[in-house]
Length: 150
Image: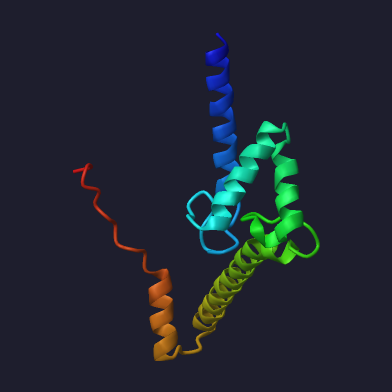
């Protein structure tokens, strides 16, 4: 029974160590995690992580210890604070800006169509470009035939 318990404990230590190692950047390579790297420092860090797990430390304590020793760049996912807020929020800012540009262009296009339609009603002749734009916008797209619907 104790050999089964030892095997389970070893498997748990190994799984936790691999999980932590995948989230820690190799300080020598920079582009690989310490789990993937074969650099001497990566091998030492993997051993350090396993030793700390066996000593009963939590994952959070191990991450904090590595961060204290090597700096915040050793972690692939930096914590959210004032210094990293721009990094974490940049995808949302870019998506918001893109949505704003799209909405503005759509609004502008609709507004131009309405002005052209009003000019038509008033009897003001449209230019060739305005006629083309009106036809492009007002002509419905061709119906696509679905291959499974004959």
